[in-house]
Amino acid sequence: MNKSITNPKKSALDPIILNKLLEKYSEESSIKKWDMGASSSSDISVQVQQGNAKQLKGSQRNSMTLRVWNKNNQVGITSTSDLTSEGIKKAMKGAIEASLFGNEKDSPEFSSLAKSELEEINPEISNSHTIDQLLSILKKAEKELIDTHKSIDSVPYNGLNESYMERIYINSEGANRHMKLSQSSIYLYAKAEEQNKKPRSAGGIRINSNLEELDIDSCISETSDKLISHLDYKSIETNKYLVCFTPEAFLQLISAFSSMFNARSIIDGLSLMKEDSLGNQISVPNLNISDEGLHPKNVGAFSFDGEGTPTQNIQLVTNGILTQLLHSEATARKFGVRPTGHAGLGAKVSVSPDWLVVSKSESEMDKDESLSIKNTIKEYILIDELSAIHSGVKASQGSFSLPFDGWIVNDGKKTSIEAATVAGDILKVLSSILKIEDEQIVTHQGISPHVWVENMSITGEA
Image 1 (cartoon, rainbow, N blue to C red):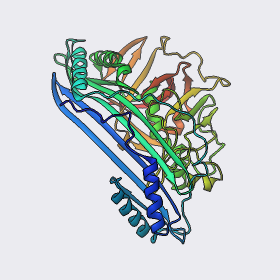
Image 2 (spheres, rainbow, N blue to C red; image 1 turned 180 degrees about the horizontal axis):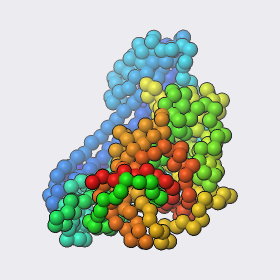
Image 3 (spheres, helix red, strand yellow; image 1 turned 90 degrees about the vertical axis):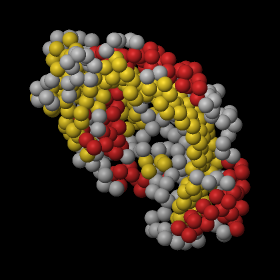
């Protein structure tokens, strides 16, 4: 029961040993070009139910992806969780065999930035805790949350986690990347029910680099306040409404359509954008969207990606214009630009955003300067959280239809919406933004202000 993360101060991956093994086996196999990305994670997590332990888990995971280039410049790729000498030897053999089936005409290369200087990130590695300690903290949080209101009867979904992660990238040309970090998170999702009413629920998440600084109290308060606000609910009519997205909800929506900024998705025909879309106006002129993996509030930031490219902050949308894309080495080569540090190493190199930041351009005006979340507006919908993202979004078409949690606000009074769905087209949404609030709010998934959008289709459900 007293299991803790194995000494987080000590590296689970040794780049010197791994490099020597790969040099040895590649030389024995007459392979002159290779690269390897590896990761290791150790974590413990607990869940509770009515003051008792529900689930206790401890795990350690290792993974490695190895690429080799044969004499014909064909690439073979293999992955393994066995990072012993024998495991790496087998991986090398498997990659060499796989290279015989590689495409000579479309071969990936090393990132041109794999040996360039990295942005200095020195995250403090937290001291490890035992499962008993995590269990005690979560039990206390569960009780405090239930005690905040008489109608809150349980916290059916919850979790407290402490993780330690390492990442390595090395290649035959001398690239050598190594970084480690720690992370703690808490998730509370509570349920409440009043007489003759349907059960209601709400949740909150907090993430930090160490357990001591994890803001559990604010997670309890947020969950309780949201849940209490949902107890008094009503159905709404199907109609078009003025909608205000909370920072969390707007980031969810943008993330669901991040293929717009993804060069890999564009090349594969899975994006709304085309190869010649750069420079196009895709939203109102006062919207800026950037991907800032190096932002100090991003506690999960690594300084390099799966190909060893330094992580970079990229301005994707500037004054409503699509200005840059997220690239791997291969997509950057096709577009004639430099890789951006957003690649994941695998059988097919993927591209994905790190930490989206939405902001308001100082040089442009809102469509409606009178709107403000602090002012009294006759009627609008406040959307707090979107659901069913995977099934309700057609990213390549731009359409979405998503259930949401939120409130209808009349003359300043918030009333929870029993059940409803918001639907639309992402490009129409971006062009229908009336106002972007000044205050940027940090969430667990990025940074955004409140964003107001006109004439959104809301379907009420009885």
